[in-house]
Length: 78
Image (cartoon, rainbow, N blue to C red; front, top):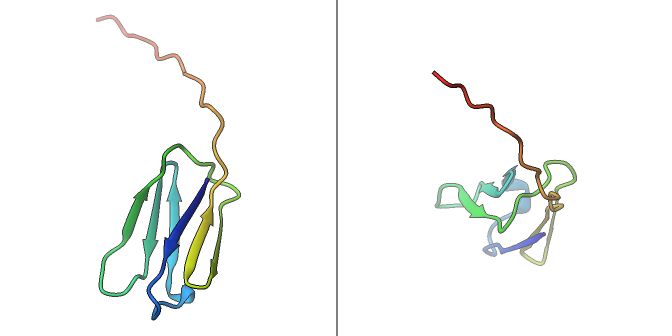
């Protein structure tokens, strides 16, 4: 998955922090606002996420997580 965010002209990429949690990306450090939360269309892997900023476009590359298998949940009878 590739997420592209157009940054305002006065934002330096060194001011930003990016955090990733499964299906969310949070961008901190944008001026005059709180964190920007972006929901991803699918779950991304936690390892291998890379971000590049070029010409005021922040591009975040998130490897897609393969299908997560169902896990059985035991039922306790009371």
